[in-house]
Length: 229
View 1 (cartoon, one colour):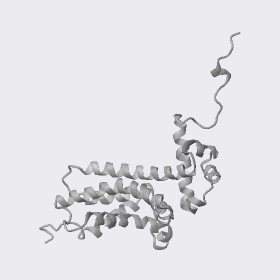
View 2 (cartoon, helix red, strand yellow):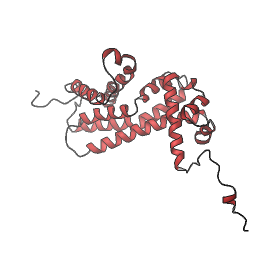
View 3 (cartoon, helix red, strand yellow):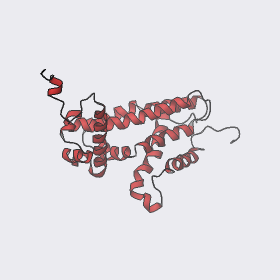
View 4 (cartoon, one colour):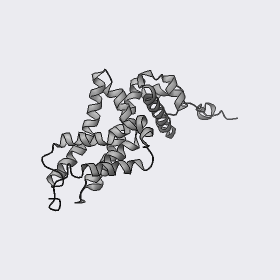
């Protein structure tokens, strides 16, 4: 009788999927989702690795295997969020290039679409970045956001000023911070005040916020046309 091969004699036991296993991406997402939920609920420093793993439905060994340690998981949380936001901004910017039309509405849509796709990100930034005592946390956030979506938006605003669509006397760097605030602050307030004032993060909210900001900005940063005098 032939001896069984090593592969048949020692089948791979179920457990952690290899990094190249298709299941690995699913496990990583489960851990990132769980860590993000808990960070919003109680702050990342208060989250235990066992608690994160339990929320994700996996063992704590998976955190070490995929992220190295606690700081690696924390880094991956922000990286995923910024990658999503940057990708959305790049896609929406590309859609508007060469259109020749008024793209202010597109810029507002970029802001709201990016934030409502990851509504936890503003809360996490407030809790873990602005309130963080460590300079490296602030620097990491500035590098990601400043070199990513914010830079793309500033470039777009400058293009619109050159085209005469937006007022040339406005500072594009300050303008982009204003636009970010108009889209971000409502998402920060919704969990606190939304129910009291009758606003909720439902399917209609993004369009509602976009239209509100569009009307608010219509005569504030748009260049004056001959029709408007």
